[in-house]
Picture 1 (cartoon, helix red, strand yellow):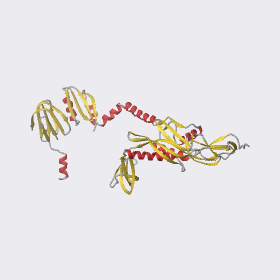
Picture 2 (cartoon, rainbow over the protein chains, first blue to last red):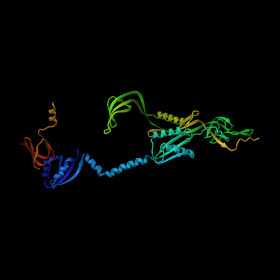
Picture 3 (cartoon, rainbow over the protein chains, first blue to last red):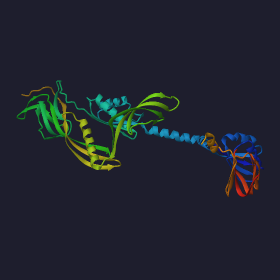
Picture 4 (cartoon, rainbow over the protein chains, first blue to last red):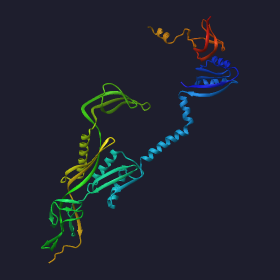
Length: 382
Length: 78
């Protein structure tokens, strides 16, 4: 109940109190300041009557109590409160807006293609930031849509910016035109296997080759003399190296369905359910029988699937194993069927906040075939 | 216990006077009579109560309850 504390000044205060009492106005608290001044507490609803009968007495509202106090405070400070709310909304909006999308790659065609793909999925300047799950989903979708041109893609949010890194897919298609090609390696490798279908192999297995080195040459030599020129073709496999940074949380959380299913009826009020016989941990599917448009109440038929929650903190060794497994998984995503991880090594292991950070070094058996056009047509030297 | 008994228990209708050294609380009175800092008269259905003392003030004045504080010297039931 709302009450008001009034200060009353006048000649004969007792007379005024008697007058109030005769009008059946309840005085919840009477506090004499002196002979001519008193503070009284009355119900808010009686104020109008008090004001009517005050006569020559001076009445001042000292204080409100109850909900009215809160209401008056809000009205009094409305500009301040509105500013705070506006400030918070502005802050949240501006910090969740993306101001730049940076694609880390030198080739223009690839950058343009990827930029269009990202815009199609809503990743562009002045758009709202997406959640981690949404970004992963978009990344996977782009990799599926552009599997011919993209080998690997990463979209990372850094503050109010997206940084997109990519690895283009090098297609080992055999050139079927009249031009001459040499077969080169696309990365620094130790050559592990060379299959030449035409041309001369100029690098051996276990030779080190830098990016761009010719492995199968178009020049056919006999005793150091150029006898013929053919367009080289083949496949080169090499041992390459990757360094991957993995972060893995120390808290392990998993929800596992036990297989138990139950259907029951309950009442939903706001976001709470009132009923009996529920599983302790569950996934639910609601089917409203009766629902009110005005009140947040509904009669609900609910299907519950019992789940077992596994939640514990991983130990150091366990976390490290999980992190390594995660790294292996990420590495394998980049590799084709004929490629594999030869070896792995953890370079640096750090415990940071509630996660383990591991720098992993992988040695990978990979197809590194590339083609480079050389000048001139088929040319036979006598 | 019958419903009427519960009602009577919850909604008392008889005059009640609670006396402590510091205050007198009167419930189910009928009307306020004369009052000043030396004496206060309260009317009830069967008579009146006169409270005498020094520095008497009415701290609470509800429709059915009155609380009187001060230096209470005498309470007369008439």
